[in-house]
Image (tube, rainbow over all chains, first blue to last red; front, side, top):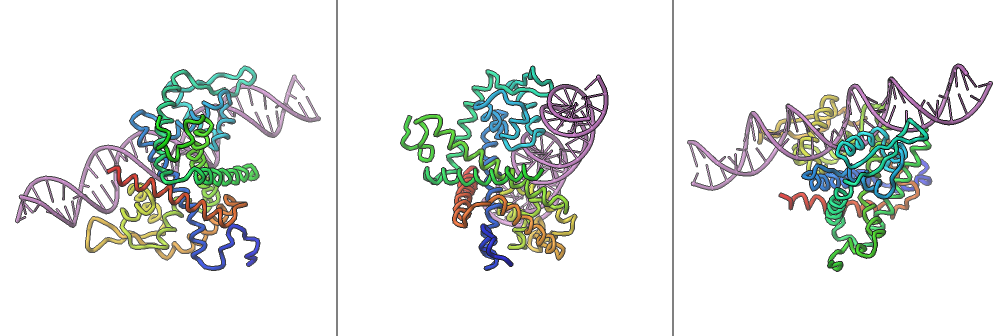
Length: 164
Length: 164
DNA sequence: ATGAAATAATAAGCAGGCTTATAATGAGCG
DNA sequence: CGCTCATTATAAGCCTGCTTATTATTTCAT
């Protein structure tokens, strides 16, 4: 059964218990993400904001002027999904689509002045949620988690490209 | 600014850089979960299955006979969300709702015989996705990730209860 | 015993993500 | 030039999850 080259799955073959534990990673990841989002969204709802809006704005604060396709890739999100988020953000006056003079197909995305107070609020809410989620974590553990997740994410995005 | 009791957020106050890194945990978690789901769902789509179906079935293989509310709590999911999943799974003949003789309000959830081959297939797909996601991870790192996520999840579910 | 409060499942309707398909524009090559 | 192919944004429609509201039943306190 070539248990040798299994690598990560190396625990397989021993018993089902080992596999169950490994499988748990997928489930934990899902649950954790869902709970995090729910927690954040509950805080943000009153202000007619949300986690997904925050995610987009957070990136824009750090990098404006990208076209939608670029921005979507940075956010690991399908372009159409981002487009709808931008529709909403634009309607609420937080974001601006500026036509690109070089290429009439695309828009460049910028924050408006109104985005600043909204971001201040959202950053606060995110901090609260994060503090709850990471209660009892040492700073090293936070970095550890962050690093592991980053590697996982890169493994999966790399895979996306190879898929084509 | 009482930077002392900040705990996890202890890096704040120094500079924005530290906060950005900490904030990244939320974003990474979201992205990782989304990519994982997308990867799995792409594999499963051809068989008219999905990650969310797998999640429910996976739990049922290990514990049958729970009522929906109990099952939903195990899965960190709102009861109504589970209900709709069960509707689908039932329609496809993978799951059964049996009335509880003691309490006519609730059903007990069981797998049918048809569930077994579907689970074999899904477990295989999940293994593939997981292998990609965790490529390059040592077994210890997988455990680490799993453990950190579990703690995070528990922090957030504990919080849910306190919310009431 | 009975009426009020809790609990189980579901319905209605929204938000966010994805796939697939389309229209418009740009790029490249004959 | 002109034709094909790639790319940008969007539309239509599905899946999954949530909140809030409803109905049926149970529990419990009086």
